[in-house]
Amino acid sequence: MAEEGERSLLEKACEALGLQWEGAEVILTGVGAINVIRALQGLDREAEVLNIGYAGSANFDIGTWAEVTEVRLNHPNVKYPEPELKVEGVMCNVEGVMCNVESGKLKEAVCYTNCDFVLQSDYKDCVFDMELAFIAALGFKHVHSLKYVSDNLSLHAYHDLTNGVE
Image (cartoon, rainbow, N blue to C red; front, top):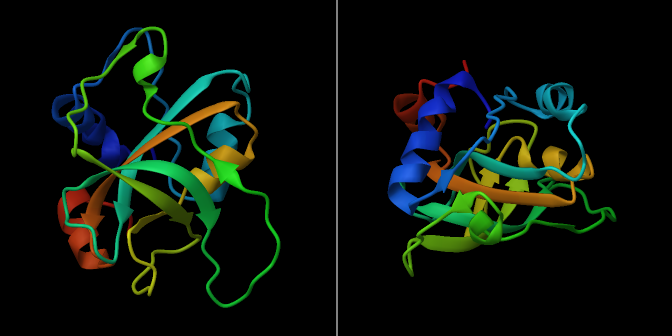
């Protein structure tokens, strides 16, 4: 998870998606690359990582849950080669995790990670966050991600929902 204001998102995910797990450690990383790296650098790379966080989307309805299938950095002004960062599906098959995701509750989506809040984009059917690519790039073997669409690229709407960053 990204920031303290997002702690309740874990409860939302459990309720909406039927997620349950035993003995999982919850780590609040903070927003952005530096906070993610500092919070997660000491974790075993074999650990199962479930990233749950808020995300913006240009066209998904607010309140939509997205299951991330791939993550990329968002740099719309330049093109350069980057490795593909795949993300595993929801943790339904992981020991100690139960999930009861009804058909149609999750939209599969690519997540574009940014170093700043995205206020506009031509990209559709995707989500935008500020952490996932950095988590995946740390080399964890099992990364899963669920994103809750908090806004349609509106910082004001994000703040209203999450009491988020200033």
